[in-house]
Length: 259
Image (cartoon, rainbow, N blue to C red):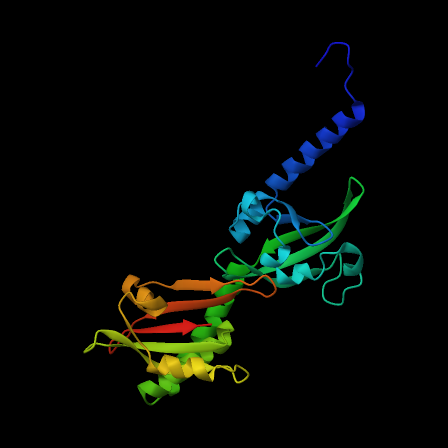
């Protein structure tokens, strides 16, 4: 600095305040996402990066719909104050999405703040996913045990397991792929779908389709013996997620897919 130029006290105070705010955001356990009035992400703290799987450079400038579709409905601060879905200041459990499109259960609180004369929306996020998943798994395990206890045949058991698993995990479609050892390929053994789901053509094609080891998502999950996920995300709607999970029994290895 030139010895004859005196520092601007207002600028120094603003910079000091900015540094202090940034230090707090970087240290808190909750995720904090700052949005402009159009729902565009302006900043994201390290906790939110961990929750959603993005680093700041990847997600800043994107629409918050990519992380939490329900938050995008309240991104404009003034209308959000009277929104019947999520009111500014309310704490609400909503669905978020990790970068691989895996759904997250998050607790979301929205507040308003002014910065440089602009009205911003501050989203504070707490990840509830693991506790919710543990509760969900316990519930599904109990339901599966009840199905197995009452099933007289393998086909009845498979059908019941698909139904309670789909209902418990919120699937719209569940498919049980079994291994045909003679052909060394996967066959569609059973399908469950939600009553409201219109997917006749897809279901018919699944019944006619076989997968070799390593071919398609079912074949890749079979080859790698682990859960695999694929997704597609459109800008105007939440991501669609398809998951393949490998399961084994004494009689036949099998894959369950969900959507």
